[in-house]
Image (cartoon, rainbow, N blue to C red):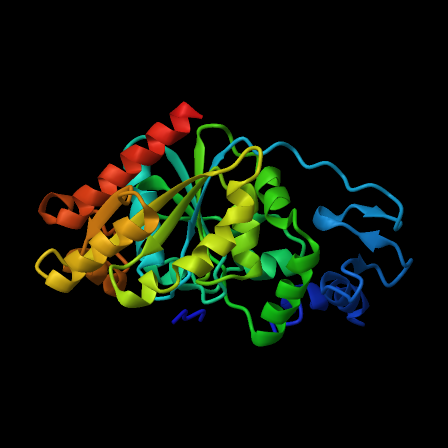
Length: 319
């Protein structure tokens, strides 16, 4: 029941500064993961660690600066549960409540760009990582003063290369976020692809809080064993993230939805942290790339989202 579910211009202007294209080609091939899990500088054979530090196979990894921001990983086993819409609304809601919010899209489908209506031509997570560029160059303005880093446009070759790389670079996300110099006042909200994949594991590895999103339907209920298998290794760590279950887009007028909600409570042996009611105003915000909380006064879902925002702030302060 689970639905897991340009070759970028070869350094465009940078090639023009190198008539033979040699440096661009070296940089390109040096940035794609090889079978041994490292990136290789073709000129001297040395290995290049994330952020461009060099060494030989026996050298130790350069320590990244500590990550002080609070990281919220938004995950789901099933697709189509409103995860990206919720990430957008939470980013706006937390920012309105005084938090400094950074929304990061780790989903190669690049949907968060559409929700925020940001520039689709600028590099995002995907190309910035392949170019070994800092993520600060990919920052764009979001709603209510928050910031967003979209995944950005990537082709199939880039996606495959990045995924191979990340399976061998478990600290990739931690290092990129640490390099941004975020403070303890920041909250990073990470949108992940549905299912069990390398991006989800990267997010879970740095998460302080995990929000599991599901809809009140049989498809989501049927994937709870998969969800438990995915989360258990992280929830058993010494410093385990706090995990909260969110039922999204509940139709209170639907008897079936209400029955599914009760079934989830029995299956999880606890009530969901928050139930977010279905609301056309929130869903329609995507079509117009507007802040989903602009009409909060007339939106029942906005009240639920603000409740969830207050829960996240309380969890952050209690840490």
